[in-house]
Length: 125
Image (cartoon, rainbow, N blue to C red):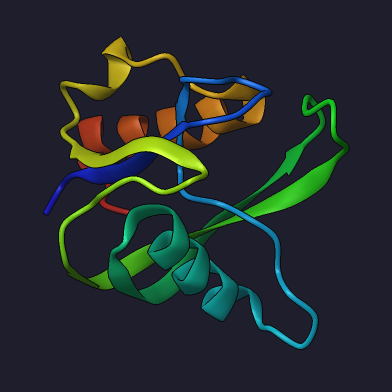
């Protein structure tokens, strides 16, 4: 629908900043299912992941380095809410995103690339 789902962090680092729902892959879990689970845990939404949009290396988190995989959601059911890990979650339009404080350099890169793709007419996510 041309909107992006972001969550507001309820913990440091970057308390109160916005980013894509995210988390860690469990043992014996494939990344796509982990993404669906993390979205459900952090927002209450049930999603089905489509294709991989991009992969990002993050090196600015004081807890350690890692890789972030961003997937396109094919279907979304429910209304976004909060969780113990999030202060809030909601869908944002292209116009609203530039006004948000984003979490870390890699988090900002991910969201800003989505924003640029929308502004350029490319709908890769």
